Image 1 (spheres, rainbow, N blue to C red):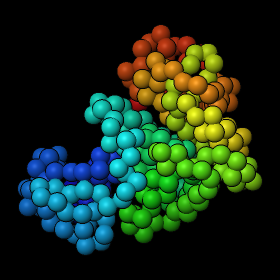
Image 2: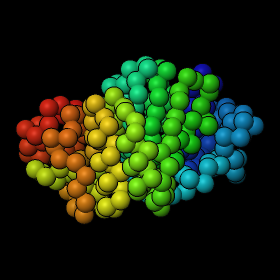
Image 3: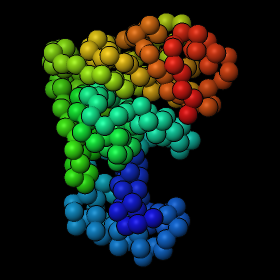
Image 4: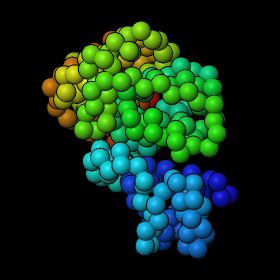
Length: 257
C-alpha cells in the first residue's frame, strides 16, 4: 500500500473512531510503526489530525459525538460492509442525497474516496458528511448543505431544512433509519427528523435505505417512510432469514452485503 493509500486509511479510521494508535495501524497496514508515525506527521502538517503520544486524534470536534465513537466494533463492521456496497450504486455525475446517522456517514466516507464520486453533486443535512470534504485530496465533488435546526448528532432538521430540500431534486437518496418495522416501514425517534427524511424522499427518483440487521429489532416513535417509498434496502448478512424473506416481499431490491 502506497503512502497516500495508508494516509486515507488512517483518516478513515479517525473519522469513524476519533482516535488511532500507531501500533494498531502498523499491524493493520502491515508496515512498521515508524512508517505510520511518518504518515501521521504528514497528515498533521496538513491540519488533518493531531499527534498524541502513541497515535493521533481527530481535529474535528464533530467527531466527538456519541454516534461516531460509541458503536460496538462488530456493529461498525456491519455498517462498513453496507456503506461499501452502497458506493457501488453511485455513478460519476450523479446527484445524490445523503441523510444523517453513522451508516450514511460511513457511506459518504467511502464514496468520497472512490472514483464513483467524480463529478457528483451532494445534498446533505449532515454536518459531519459535509465536513468530510475538508480532508479530501482535490476531487470534483460539490456538496450542498440544507440548513435547519441541529440535532445532538449534528443533523439539520425542521422547516428550514424541509423548505430547502423541497426546492431541489436528487436522482439517488441514501438514508439510514433507527428502526425497521415489518410491515409498517422506517422509523426515527425525532418527529422533526422524520419530517426532514420524508422531505428528502419526496424529491428522490430512487430511495436507498442503509440498515444493519439490528434495526429490525429496534423500536422507535415516528414513521417517515413506508416500504412503498423505498426501491432498495442494503443490509448485512446477519439479518435472520425470516426477516429477510418478509422484507424481500415488501421491497423490489434487497442487497445483502
